[in-house]
Image 1 (cartoon, rainbow, N blue to C red):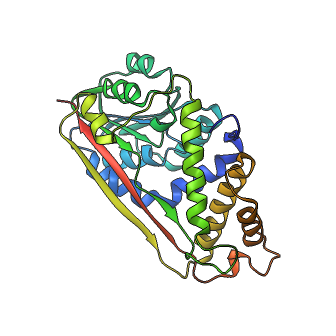
Image 2: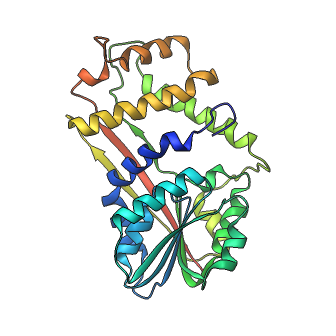
Length: 289
């Protein structure tokens, strides 16, 4: 996030754990496709609560998974999650503090061997020079090793186009505001450089081949059960909250969101039976020759 929208990672820690648990099935599906029978070292860069690190470990016969993150509060969270969820002595799962912006070359020197798999989810787009970062991550790989980037896809949707409050297309305008915020955030990053091509081309320019993409649909149709409904409301509340001070949402849209997210209001989204979750996730994979 930019300086206008600071992130309190200690405050977000419970949400990261909830996300790791909610996405467990997806992580396992992707890990099953990525991990090879001879893999002995995997690295999860920007690991969050280590949900994917644990999924990768579950697919390995033996070896080591190194989960890294640049935020101390997140490192502590990942360590606690792994401590509670992992006990197989054949695969060592450890967490290290490493900032993807500065520490990856040094991390390479501390690994016992080149990596068979490097996973980075929603991490590279926070770096000024995305192509340089991808090339650095590719340098961690052994011949035949895979770099997997979970980036792109389609944003999550939850609401009908017309919800009967404010102008139709309220959630679409929320996404448009987030896109404009993202452009601003990218421009403000140190050493920011545009990458005017897609993730697969970036992997090729890092010297990886072949390069493939797998996109999966994540759909929960209405009516949502209570846990999913609460997750949708929390997700929308967070997005509106951090976009509020940016000036990218109109006063009319903010008024509508305030009513929709207020449990005491008759228009509260929690009363609706037509909320849903729909998104698409893309994973781009390049192989080191």
